Image 1 (cartoon, rainbow, N blue to C red):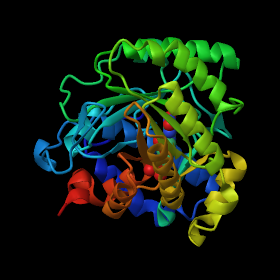
Image 2: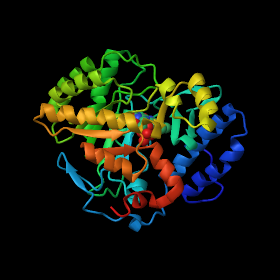
Image 3: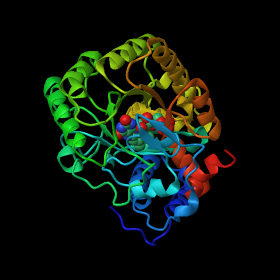
Length: 375
Ligand SMILES: Cc1cc2nc3c(=O)[nH]c(=O)nc-3n(C[C@H](O)[C@H](O)[C@H](O)COP(=O)(O)O)c2cc1C
């Protein structure tokens, strides 16, 4: 990893990159993607290890806090999985005012992630469209290492820690599930972790989709029903899911003992999404999706995630589960209005990724403070 020339606050780098965009956009698209992919890695390293964030950037606000599954969340908004794949960055986002933190997604074995045409971990942001596309392919250090990681020395009582895990695509399905169950137990035994998220939705790996229900049945028998402590587990699925399939999955998830559902992950529905992409971003969008594929994130997912969450909330209310079961929204969260819209339909928590960095570029360390100003 390159060393920074100066020890600047991380948002200087993101602002600098955005100032450069008009010039970068003159380069061939493959070069733009190369620069963005490298730049993302460099920036994330600077962002995660920041030391000089004043702790009064966002003070605890009881009107926003909520208790779910007996766990206190300072606010209903935190990062979504994939931002801190190796458990970095808790202290940074906790100081900025996040309501919770999620590390991972991790897999049983270490993975380098995807590489093609000389580009490692391909990524591009499309700021005019409020979107991004990534084809990272689950790079992470592996669960043997990560489950032992001390995520923070200064955990806040109201900024809980979640961890996202996934079946590794490097094994045949049944062996992969065995490894996944083993990993779930490893994180179960890490007392810093307050809840888990099972990622059943990554578009960037050759996992063979198959049917999710038999897989979660095995996880229920071997893990969910045997948990020895309060450790809620959320099922994260794709924002591309069809509503009938969603209803079926919600019924199974509730019956099998899951504690929530997250809608959801990035989209590969390029044909429909393309209409929402700014004309200036289309060339990059087309090149990236045709060359790498990848999952699209950001504002373009907002309507879909809201509609799917509304369906999920209604179904959960109809079923009236015995356990506390929550609907979590991820996809296109970018503004206070998005959080209000989520609240209106009964979403319990929101996660953001693309919108977080969009706001961070504009507001720096006031990213959360600004969002909740006047609330
Ligand atoms: C660079 C990048 C990496 C991601 N990695 C993961 C991941 O490892 N696990 C996961 O469940 N989702 C991952 N996601 C998806 C996000 O967690 C989120 O569900 C999705 O981006 C939609 O939210 P957004 O519109 O706020 O970005 C990733 C997204 C991005 C942009």
